Amino acid sequence: MSSFLDRMLGRVKLGGWLAVAAPLLAVVFAAVITSVILLATGKAPLEAFNALAQYGAQPRTMVTIINTGTEYYISALAVAIGFRMNLFNIGVDGQYRLAAVVAAGVGGAALVPGVLNIVLVIVVAVIVGALWAAIAGLLRVTRGVSEVISTIMLNSIATGIGSWLVKNYFGVLTGNELATKEIPADAHVPGMALIPGTQLQVSGFVVLAIVLGVAYYVLLNRTRFGFELRATGKSESAALSSGISPKKMILTTMIISGAMAGFIGMPELLGSSYKYGTNFPTGLGFTGIAIALLGRNTPVGMAIGALLWSFLDNSSDTLQLLDISKEIVAIMQGVIVLSVIIAYELVHRYRIVAEQRRVSRELAAPKGPQQVEGAPA
Image 1 (cartoon, helix red, strand yellow):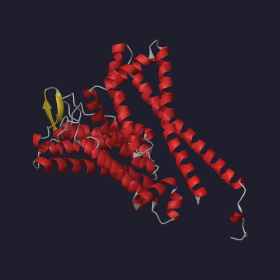
Image 2 (tube, helix red, strand yellow; image 1 turned 135 degrees about the vertical axis):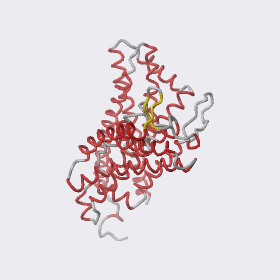
Image 3 (tube, one colour; image 1 turned 30 degrees about the vertical axis):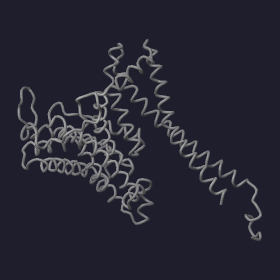
Image 4 (cartoon, one colour; image 1 turned 90 degrees about the vertical axis):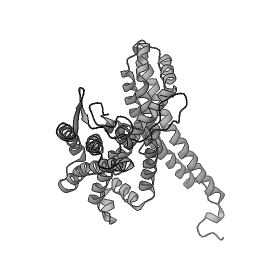
């Protein structure tokens, strides 16, 4: 019994060490590569890193990092649902933008008052995102069209439809900007004064992001549907032989991913600008892909990745004070994603080798009298 416990503890320690080693290796590797680039351009790496850290520690910047990270995190969740099913939903960008346009038009019309309008806007956004993603799912299961191709094309179509809706139905001209009508004040989601030292407030949608993260974990790891989703992602043929319908799982997963994408624009629409216009954030779907890879599709990992990405995005302007191009941050972000992928692959291979060595040692170890087959108890 004691030897069994020792082996189990050894596995836990090995797994825990490897889980920490991968992101640490990635961060170290990214820092080294970025330092080399800075040195090649004649800049001091320590000075640049120190400037980023000091700017990021300011209360005002911290609030901005959290608020931007909230949008990044929801986007990563939408992408990760597809990843766990082995689906590459590149269409999250178009799904959340089209959902935001329609939701902004409905919210600006003020069909219902107050909190009901908030609920209506969110429900409309979720439904539109789900329906738009369902198109790619249907094309995959009925015609065999790769979701990579269909979602890329649907992104462009969604952009065109959104512009057409704003121009012809939802838009009003305010100054030089054509945008949807502003959502009434009684349907604004309030912020929270969580960080002292600044008048800026943390978005109330942080709570929603946490709820969505918990729901994502429970759905994928504590439900039968989640098991079937992951099983189908591993092997469609094996899932089919076990009574699981791969086509049904593909379509359902795309719909859930699109529904999650509908939440992405809500912090901006209900907590910041209160309308859809030319300044509405774009490209969040592609950012979500990077963060999902960075966080290995885990809720906590993606939360850390979203805050890191937001920190780099919001702290980049301070580099210009040191005469360093802020594009160095984009290089750093790319290196981080690549290094994380490489680091996890190296750790995965090491884990396999370590497990093989452990099994070999156990097989080669001499057996006691009670373990010898046929020996008396």
